Amino acid sequence: MRRLHPPPSPHDRINTTKGSTVSDSTPENTNPTDEFLSTLEDAPQPTRKLKLPEVIPVIHRGPSSDGGTTGAPTGDGSPYAEDADATPLEGSDAEAYAALKAKRAERRKKKLIHRAIIAGIAGALVIGGVVAVNVLNQQPEQVMEAVTDIATQGTFSTVIDSKGTLQPMSSTVITPEVTGQIESINVVAGQHVNEGDVLMTIKNPDLDRAVAEAERNLKQAKSDLNLAQQTLNQASQIAAAPTNDPNAASVDDTSSTQSAVNSARSAVEAAQAAYDDAVSKAALRTVKAPAGGSIVALNAQVGADVAESLGGTNGTSGPLMQLADLSKMKVTIQVDEQDIASVAVDQTATITCPAFTDLTLTGRVTAIASIASGDTSTMSYDMGGSPTFAVDILIDAPDARLKPGMTAEVSLTTQQLDNVVMVPVTALLTDDGQSYYVNVETDPETHAMERLDVEVIAKNDDFAVIGKPADAPADQNPDMPESPLSDSDVLVIAGGSMPEVMADGVESGGGMAVL
Image (cartoon, one colour):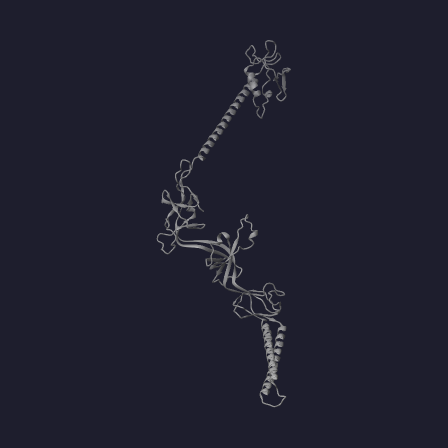
């Protein structure tokens, strides 16, 4: 089929994509077809562009009365007319054009339906959001599942937990008092010894020579004393006998002889002291146990040289030997300054050792340091540091398996009250931080409750003492008031029948839990 393409006018712009022309001029009169085509041109183009020239022929406007081209219908009623040399539309072209119009109308209808669906969904989401916000903003129900606990009657205690190291109550470092060389070692590590048992011997020939020389000097002094005494005796006899001999011994001779005896006697005493000292010093070569105990350290070696009054040796390190009394042991723990005021001598403690999980020991406080441990002047309080004080705890009957240096875990009881009524600290409430009350359950089904004021006498991390039971003996905790609660009374911790809400939104009877 031949396509009709009139030459474009100067007012037309050529659409190179579609192969058609579009007039820039505004006609005075338009027909429905022109309006439809104008709508198609102004509407947003779909992603896939239709190629109109390939579907329908190019239609030109009919001639106007003045010979120009207008959009007015022709005299025969046709909306468009071809130029003088144009060929009339064929039937297939009109059908294609009608099909295109129907397709365009159907597409626009689908778009309108699609937009309506989107608008409906958006509206539903907005309505749902408003409903959700209203639901979230609604006040929660005033009744929820109740959490309860009970008051208990029993023994209350406050405990300080700490760790320390096992040490013997008394310990002695064996130090030789003479120089020499270790000749023999008579014990082994861990051995129990009694007072006076020989631990080791030291070889020192100089001490033997000193004893021998002192012995000789003593013998000589004694001999000199005997000779002086004989001379004195003879002089005394001569002086006492009557005689006319002018050369006979005089009283002066007797006096000088007595002085010689006295000097000889002093020499004997000095020689005896020197001999005794030499023997005593030589005896120190035999090292004996100063007391009964166990050998907890043994670094001595046969043949090693030792120095007088020094624990170190050539070829050894540490004390030659250490003797400890393991019949009593102690643990030293560090107690924070906030708790040290509650610690006192003779308080009891429970000791356990990780090395022996089946072992539980009992100890008591024997000493409390008067000054803080370490250098408190450099302690960083910003880092949460706090001064600590050393506390010694004695174990009267330690297990034979325990050894010095083992880790010990200590639970020190600083306060104990027997036969008292206690409530969980989670049940305590307060309005002002000073006075306390609890909520007592009055109906187990509805968990209705009533407020009961209580006096807190003592408190730890878990329980608070509120008094003694009504049937307590008169001599037990005589200064403690009677508890308003009894054993097994039910307390409401949370939930239950909540207090009524006042007009200003504040719950009546509310309080702060004391933990």
